[in-house]
Image 1 (cartoon, rainbow, N blue to C red):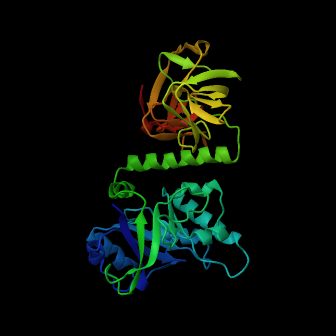
Image 2 (cartoon, rainbow, N blue to C red):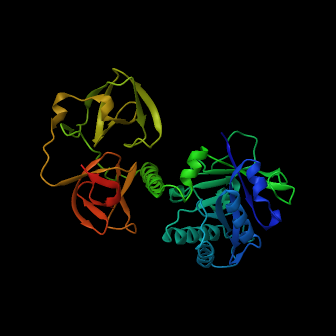
Image 3 (cartoon, rainbow, N blue to C red):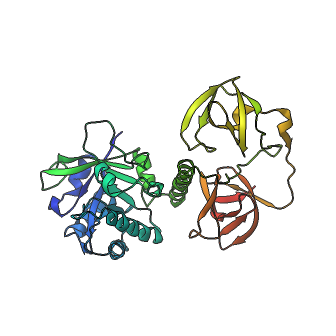
Length: 383
């Protein structure tokens, strides 16, 4: 099922939200503000959408007439009492009359970072051509969901780097306005990249735990991609091992045999990274490096999970566990930070089911022995 939605502003006149709902719209993005003023129709459109049962997201049109921080504060204050169900959006599409192509990007970064400081993960609305001129391919932007405006007959929109996919797609600006309750003849029409159930999971009124896990999973993918693109030799977090045995690091030149019908070769030692190829059962590979539950092979070059390989007997040793408190990660992915709080930088991550030793606790955060750092205790349970 294709999940359809629209976006409206004062230009849609006296909008009938119930018509939009009857026409099949499941969500609506409503223009709330620009610079430091409120869209003339925001209040009534916001209320109408709620009464019609549409999932609502507010968007702010970012311009250069007011400082970015002032705009972000104005936007947050406007939504303080009723933030809607979907994440807030920053509309990044206003070009410059001068040749200063760096100012828009600076404005955008100040804006989204203020929203993050208020506990929000905003969506960025832009177009491929605009982003090519005024954005950049830094993986910093990958953490923000993308709402892409791309009017094409293709089955999918153009997605500008560094994004790999899109959250929402504005595929037409000439939708049937009257059908969706607009006084204007045309209306912007959008698609959600997922099912209706997944849209509700994204909505604010659904499980906070699921949203939190989704955010840390995005951060995890971001860290992984940065590692590959920048070719950093950062220590990879050790994944949990079985209670009976522990695989040691393999020596250069060590051989292994594939014991699965299909084993994917990935760009790095993590399953979220792209696949570069695959191996078949009984293929022999030469291991050139090993990190936790992954081995780097010589040909085809890449990383394979150790569970797909038959290691030599000398590589298996007993896992002798010392005394202490152990816990298990219950989130799909969980950041490890340098200190007990979300303001500290990410220094590693945990995967679901990973078993770690806890050294101490501090106000809802647990200090880990390896990987060394702190994680939210909410997502850890006794081993």
